[in-house]
Image (cartoon, rainbow, N blue to C red):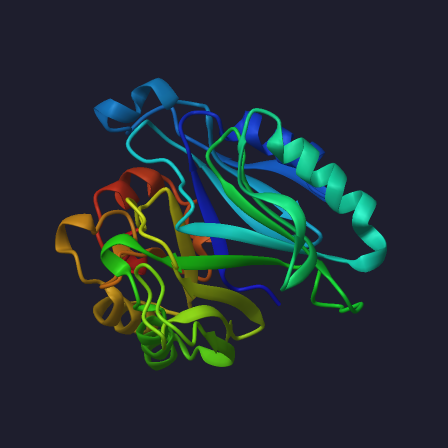
Length: 291
């Protein structure tokens, strides 16, 4: 059962993006999950009154959340989304690539590579980066959406450290790791060319960039982690939060720069309470009893 959810910051375009992804991605659908209230908004949020707040996209059964917000942030390639295809799905892979490429740009062209018979990395017109990969052998897990954390810029060469840290805080378990073996422009020989770890049933990829990057993690792509009860929220928040000025509405930034949303597992239910949105926007760490 999915627990970790990728959240994408959309600059007022969440509904449009949801429709785009529902058409572009395989076995996908979209739904407006929540709307901004018409009262109790902060001044900068007032133009969004009554508009969608969160839009959900399901891709082959995995949920991605689009957050409808302002121009403060936008996604970048530091967190991309890997979508794998079996070898007999090449036509689906190619169609997905064509759809995502419209109005976007290729970071790595769709082609054969030593690690995949067909692979490409593209940033779509909303700034979201996708890695499409053909798997040689049929695999029930190969069709899942998997976020990929690229440690570059100020976070260069910290992928292994991050996986170990997420193990201590969130119970992450390393599945596989492939070091570069020799130094690159910025990566050391023991930096991770690619690794995969598990957070419960969810899979996450991580890598150290092999070339210099002028960007790193931002709230443009965040990771939502639900907690069972206030005690668990308190523990995870205290362990992860490393940038006090970034704390707002359940959002935090960890010591690697990755943005997380630490929420109660019954967040949807809590948001149905009268005045819940207004209460939430005045919190840093979410306190269940204050909704």
